[in-house]
Image (cartoon, rainbow, N blue to C red; front, side, top):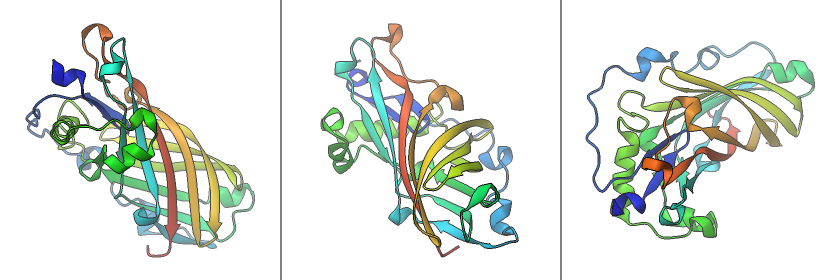
Length: 248
């Protein structure tokens, strides 16, 4: 019980409680490949015709962070958490000129991150996130939490090893854009609207924004002790800056 009171974690759209030891993974009963469309998307295999270019998202020049918040009457015994995603793969089909609805309608985008690539509660990340995240966490507790998060009670990474995002529609006028995005974890899908800020050059666009996701939207159950004394909020905050460039 003491270990549970001092350890809460969630990842992106997935959240699970901490334990003093990892939960053994469930035996796989299928794979994400069976439930998801082929990867990479069709627009990468055969780029659209017209004036535009296929660009690759560049993780080394991008930033993707998820912030998770404690809840419950005993929230003071828990912790907020920050999750970094330093590695992912993705593409943009980007018109030569983003002017008018037709150009925006031609944009295509997709991103995939693998759960095994996440970084949980790195000291530098917690310090950078502010005072509400700055308390130090025991390395063993973080490791155990990671194992449970990736296990069958969390995102079930053996069966669904990746989270995929697809850009469905883009509207507005630069530099302020509105994107419709589909999130997919195995057979679970959810669509949401994202406000974007466009910057950078025509051949190296940079898209920045933030949004609120909920565990329930991806079929996940936020961790909570009986009676809700200690829990995590259903909502998690995702902040990102995605840099695209040549190299597709």
